[in-house]
Length: 140
Image (cartoon, rainbow, N blue to C red; front, side, top):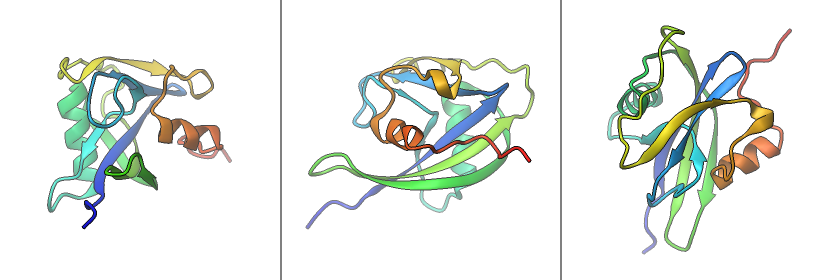
């Protein structure tokens, strides 16, 4: 029997036309790449609850206006299948500064413009962004 897919939630935190990325340390997923804050969905948790919890646990930031953007299904190896739920959020207080609360998992957090992403960016996320996905709201 094949292992069940894992479900993760990743959060595009938007501030001044930039997105928060962290440089991940060795983990089973996204090892040594730049990725969004996020993590595994816990049993009974909504996507919004997971986004808020993971962002707080990893960065110390409080977020608001959390909304679903899209999802992707990623077969990363013969045994790793990850479904990622992508959310968008904003800082509850724009003066907050991200903290590196889990230094064993991440080297730190920085703000980046979408047209100047850090390398290497987590593969499935990079492919999605390179394909034209934009987490910023459409300007009318």
